[in-house]
Image: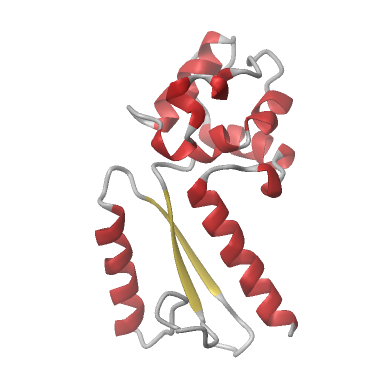
Length: 151
């Protein structure tokens, strides 16, 4: 692998124990002989493991403005309600909750088309605006990887 490459592994935790999942990911990298950010001790790293808590759709709740831009009939105050204030703690399946909100607003009547939603919301997303803790960790890792390649 070229010296200037970095690998970012991103996984949904899907109700797995985050700490156990992260340790499994770190162990796999260690067995492959790849230096991870977690174990680098501030030295240059080749791979960073990140976990989406709970699912990728959780990140949509972290940048609700992007959802509203993509789907204008969605109420802008959804994330002001207790079940959605913390994007990483949406109970009962983030994608199911997300789908339910969009369906009630007239979108995806036959079921959430995840790729379509990801493309629409992704084009409206402002990474600096997202408040999901797991997204922030991901964003920081990407920024660090890119900065390390420039120096």
